[in-house]
Length: 312
Image (cartoon, rainbow, N blue to C red; front, top):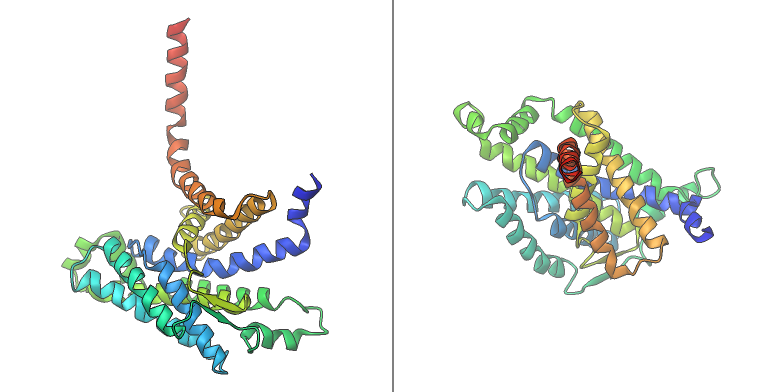
């Protein structure tokens, strides 16, 4: 019992919140591409690693601040390729994402100078720079939380404002009714490209921040991120339904934190590391099937009662 309660100590909860906020940037990327644009982008894993590797390389070159825009630009390039495969070459969105994700593995290795791991222990990062500024203050040791919170708040505010603009409404219209968009003056190719570029820039930003916070960029750092993000997005939808964009984006952030909390509980219960991917898959199944089963529950109960009545 004491070991289980140790999961919820202050240090563990801070880690859950930090990782939840960083991964919520990827969830917000899927919020834009999957929820708004109605495109299931399976290049998320590779794009996340791309942001981590580009950010790490730029930080190692002595420019930790520039690593943020560099990673986001790399993510936009990944989104551009994915979008062009869909819109110009007519490749199915799922297949386009898989193709780009596969190709990004080789690109990420090349970016990391033919290495599968970049160590950032001996170089300055955004987090180490802020840590030096916070030493001796009441916020000492909170550099990861501060940077992650600033990034998340910035992205949520951007989405809240952007999706209300003419371009943002066009992106939402493309996801809701592409046939209607084609018959209007809106070019679905342009909206899809812009939407995926912005979404993938958020994913790359998430990878960049995670790599710098963990002081390393590893080739498999993004493996399974699309599952984590999708599960978090669906969990967030349970908390916030049929609300305005800011609240729905906030729900996505809450979903990411809740997912990390469940993950932490599984780790605290000494579940083998190889089982954590199964935990992610189960969470996705519950998040997807839960609302459906909830609507069908009265029917199931009614059928069960009819069967029990016949038996009597």
